[in-house]
Image (tube, rainbow, N blue to C red; front, side, top):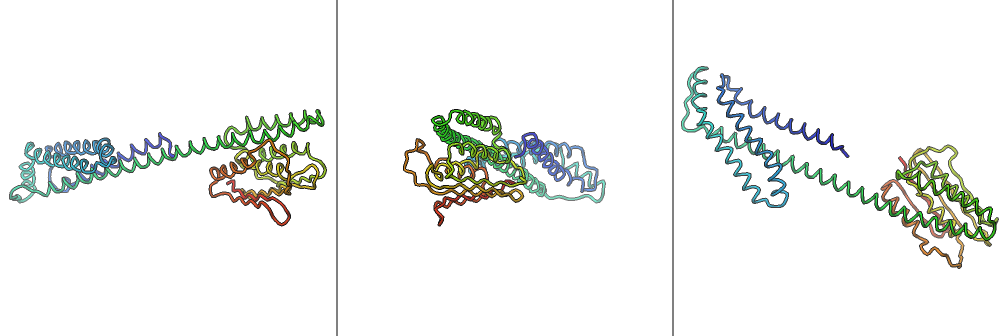
Length: 356
């Protein structure tokens, strides 16, 4: 997006260029006559140029916005034709008023054989009509393009605000969802080991600090996000028994990149919610690979049919919102595949994310 100061400078330079071109066209023709041009002609040229400037900006600031862009095309063209007629008549009147024709005849007479004219030379009128049409045409084109660019910029800003608001809403939904489950786990620990529960609360407070202070810019570093995921896994392990096997692999040499906060957590959280059991053999495998800026995340968990009642009735909210966040933050830069049941009775999530 172009800054306003730079956009204003471009507009000023555009107008200078436009009138520079018009001035060259308008004042160049008398210089081709190979005579001493009377100063009265230059006075007339300046006055007509002033009318053209008035016509240009009246068309730009009033006629185009108030009539043409509001589909009042007939009224617009009637007014434009009237303005053109006024300038042509003014040009004719100034020729008579400043005695331009006689002065030009005298100037040509001094420079060579006299020129004879029958009636009025209408070539000047046609040239004037062409110049007026050019001025008003450029005015209409420039104003229309600027209006289109302004509307486009406003639409982009509105879309950006909409995306920002939606992301904030989605993140606000995910965070309570995560803390709700984690607090349930800590509550369960208090019934078994108060000391371990205290350590878990301390760890949770560190995770909350990360969310409250380290993710305010809308992004975090990949290393911080993975550290957060590891903290979460460590916290979840406190309530698990030996029948659950947890495997977490991450790149040994991480190419640290900015990433959306809590973009991976819902996949890991979902694995712990539905893939572990206190009595049955179960497992969770989390593998993170990286090649340049492309991150490859695979989360596999065994499927446990647990008929116990969960206090969290919004079990799918994290995954749904995460997919929506990916759509908004990484359009065309991610691939998400979810296999709800494979031959090994596993639930698999595979995310490929381009962080460039």
